Image 1: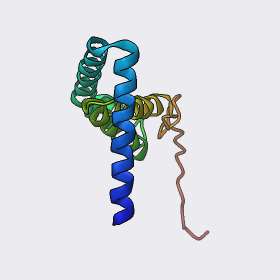
Image 2: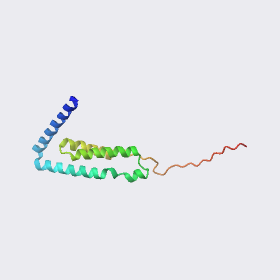
Image 3: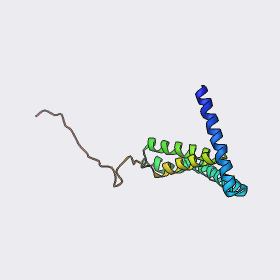
Image 4: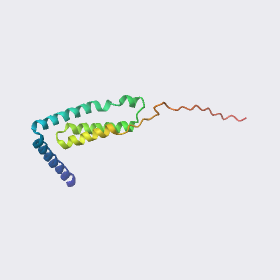
Length: 125
């Protein structure tokens, strides 16, 4: 438990350090604009996220596990973008990038399923 507490304090200290550096480098207005823009992007991602590939999932063109992984990555990335801070925004954008770049695995062949019709007869001659 103390390790998690120290890790959280270290993260908080690093986040404050990054915010101070960004404010010194770019100014308070730019930082506040970045926080507002990332919060807006996070809100859009969270509102749009669950239903993005729902039609592909219903039509069985998308693997349900792949859809759930993408949903999780987009949701966590959106929440991180909602939180103010530079490091949260970096991690949120990385998760959104991974969610959009990762390979989506189709469940069936895009040309259509192969159907083989076989009839088996057990009649003795």
